[in-house]
Image 1 (tube, rainbow, N blue to C red):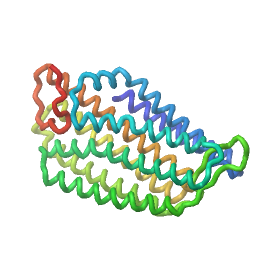
Image 2 (image 1 turned 90 degrees about the vertical axis):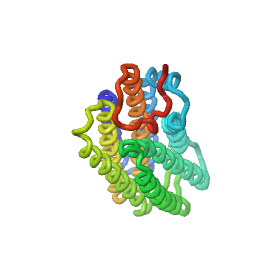
Image 3 (image 1 turned 60 degrees about the vertical axis):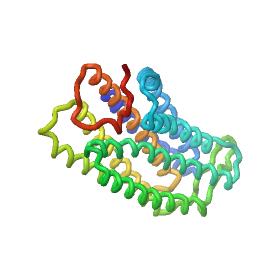
Image 4 (image 1 turned 45 degrees about the vertical axis):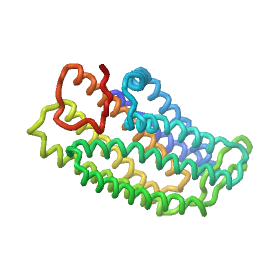
Length: 304
């Protein structure tokens, strides 16, 4: 996990540096957003492909040896949805001579894929929090109800802004793609809600850690706590960054940070699930018992 964390941190620094350089170089050029989109989304796609190649062995081991379950299905959707999201973004950035109506359609698809990616990533950690609290069904209902309310609000705002938005295409030969030329300050609201939700899950995880830190020394339990805290911390940092960029930057620039957050959260969620599964396999092989009910996190995934 440490190597993955370092790679992610380095890539995040590279992404922001690239944005800053492009903003400077294209400041006086009305076609700057087109060039910026193309560079950033190509670098995102390269990063995702690099991460997938680095974890290919672990990926194949998990997919071949783990038993089929709902959690495994969620893993597959979360893992490969960024590929579809990035493909859509690349097509949106490089399509030649498209009309604003087609740009709007593709942007709506992109927004829907991004929202679905966040739902899948967050679902892992809702289930983990549920397991940490000994499968407390009341807590699960509260978390799901809150998440659903925030989700409905976010989807309504996102598509209410996208439908009347105006889109532009480049007039210079050789520069392709289209981008949303109008924006709305309300775009910060979905990320504010996501920030509040992740902060609530982090508080629940910290409370559980304080309650049980003296009663258990299970390594699997400790790793689960660390994963949760790290995921929520990353989510909070990205959400806060998206709140400020949504208020301060044009849509054509801050929309790229939206997609970057979705991709990073998906990578973190699936990598952490892989790591937890590997530890569970080792614990099962050695006969080590865990102090938390893991059936909702790793249901029937032990191999003989």
